[in-house]
Image (cartoon, rainbow, N blue to C red):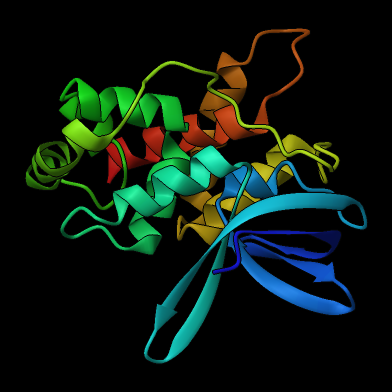
Length: 205
């Protein structure tokens, strides 16, 4: 298993990044929140999980080891694959997901695109006793690398939402809502704004 990668961010795309390690460029699939913390040409460390399928090998990247551990645990629930687990972590930070599962907060889980009421109930039933502590920080931080934004936050949100399959019109409407909610004089938290945008879009579909 490839537990982590550390190297130069050689490329960024809406659904992942290329991290150059020892002269080899590794394609890493990342949630938009994780991508928003990377900066092209800078050093970064990503906790990783390798998902092996008959026809593919996919390396998923995370802001820290805790996020990766939760990603792997989520997949042990029936009906939750790596893509859905990644989407869950894009919508909610690890602490919020743990809290929702531990307390049977179905509305929070249903806010994730792809999870219905029955799916939320199944996730809670199968993971509630295994989810672990629900305290801790909401925001993961990449260690060993820059967390500066790579583009104006509106552009980052637009690219990230496009990578999740939302149309330009849907993304634009959600971005306008979160922009109106943003307090004056406060630096935008792109990961938090992305989670809010996905929640808004999930309610309109």
